[in-house]
Structure formats: structure tokens, C-alpha cells
Length: 152
Image 1 (cartoon, helix red, strand yellow):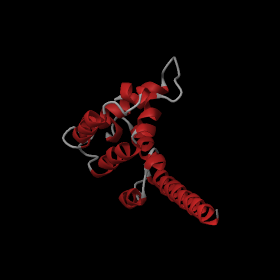
Image 2 (cartoon, rainbow, N blue to C red):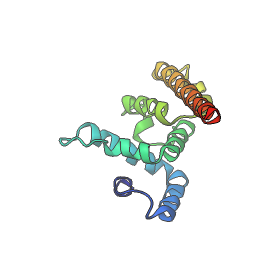
Image 3 (cartoon, rainbow, N blue to C red):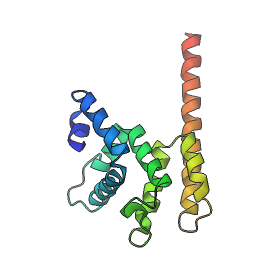
Image 4 (cartoon, one colour):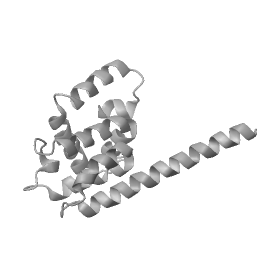
């Protein structure tokens, strides 16, 4: 998937749709683990790439990565390192924090039950606020574009 993200996704759209279907379905826990490792590898890379492979995944497939992160929220007991409290407190918080870039209104509803968790509650508040600000900004920008088109 990373090779496709860096090369462009037009050539193998059907293959990528099938792959994402599997990654968001029966292999979601494995996909979460892989994404967590990609993020970790990017952090400690000796040769920084711009954008990083992790950022490239999020930028190329925002809806799919959002769905994967939301799956983590709903199935955190079954997921691997990002939600394993014994081994990766920060990975869980970071994955939730990344929902700020791809989350929707539905994501904020999924996050609400985590507001009371001492380990991630503050992060959840920040993410919900970031998602709401981003969505409001997008709505304002869209309304301004429509207004400018009707005035032309």
C-alpha cells in the first residue's frame, strides 16, 4: 500500500479497494498493528521522508485510515500494540490523537465514552475539539466558495 501511495493510486484502484475491504474487515487487528509499526518506524527513521510513510497513508486514504482508527476504538481489547495498556500507553494516545486529522462527527460520538478514562481523557477532549474546528472551518470554506460562485 505504501508503494501505491507514493506512486499514485489510479493504476490499481480495484485492487486497492479489495485490499482495504480486507484490512477493514477480517484483518483489521493486523492492519492496526502494521499502521502502529509504520508510525513508530517513521519516528525513529535515520532518513526522514516528507511526507513520512505514515502521513502518506493518512493523506492518501483518509476515510480508510479513519475507519481503521474507529475500529480500534470499538475493538480495543482485540487490537494489538496501540491499545495494549501494558506495553504501549503512548501509542494508544497517539493513534487517538491522529483522529483529529481524519475524524468526522461520527468519530466524535465514538470518542465520547473515552472522556472519563484518566489515561486518554485529555487527549480525547483535544481530538474532539480539533475535529469540530476542522469541520466548522471546512463548512465555512465551502459556504464561502458557493457564495463566491453565485456572485460571479
